[in-house]
Amino acid sequence: MIRPRRLVDIAIVALLLVLAWKSVQWAVLRAVFDADPQACRALQHTGACWGVITAKWPVLLFGHFPYEAQWRAGLATLLLLAGAAVGALGLLSTRREGARTSAAAAGLAMVAAVALLRGGWAGLPTVPPEQWGGLPLTLLLGLVAWLLAWPLGIALAYGRWAGPRPLAWLCTAVIELVRGAPLVIWLFAAAFAWPALLPDPWTPSLLVRVLIVLGCFAAAYLAEILRGGLQTVPAEQAEAARVLGLGWWGIQRRIILPQAVRATLPPLVSHAIGLLKDTSLVMVIGLHELSGSLGLSIGGDAEWRPFYLEAYLIVALTYALMCLAVARLGRRLEARQMPLAV
Image (tube, rainbow, N blue to C red; front, side, top):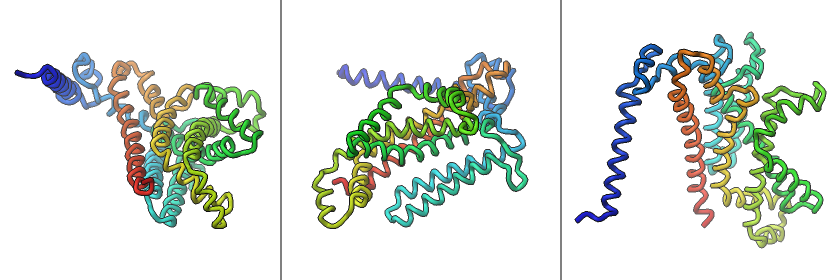
């Protein structure tokens, strides 16, 4: 006699197999891959219309970056991905010199990517930041905001954890104020309140304002994660290091902060993934990153507008792959640090 729990397991497996078969039929067997809107409409949504990607991939991938200069956006995307990969290798390196070299190479790759997108040198036409979009803008926003968040987040964490009382109150107020409002509110403030309150010489481009907001928003959450890690380090370690002659900064840089980061690796990785996904919110203020480029490419085209689902699936897959890469890096870092934690 088959147990009831076994029957449930068999039913779940059978249901998953049916769903998998239906998905293969819709996504592959009945799908249209050519940029033929009439063939896609003839399917009546019984199969996927991947032709929308074939027809719209330049706008979907690069937004309204000038068509004749899209090779620059593609090369900048490769540079940003290479910079992120080199930076990840530096984090995994056990040699300090290797980590510094990787960090320098990653920084140069990001600077080169921005120079390519901007232009204005070697005969390249200038493309203003308002025309940047798609995947390169998503990568740029995520990477730069994450880098900006670290020095500010560390300063806020130490100010709240170990600073004088007035400084601790100030850091607490900043952290709670930034975390207390949704990111969309701060993005709208950067887009509309900043230019209204400050004169033109003090108002940078919209992209720079958004990067500042994203960096500050990420720093507020990063500060609280790090503060929790700082509190886990035993005070005896700082006292022993002080006896050995290390100053306050040396103790924090060599002993306290590395252990705090090590103890908070899982929430730090989750925070990085969340920040990467939060970059999609900039579409509400007119910056067309990856998800915003989707609306830009399909929203005004009556032929392809009915096939939003396929385009959203591709965008979702792109975000998933980037987030999986960050999660994989986090697991590698945890595995490398585990013997030290034991």
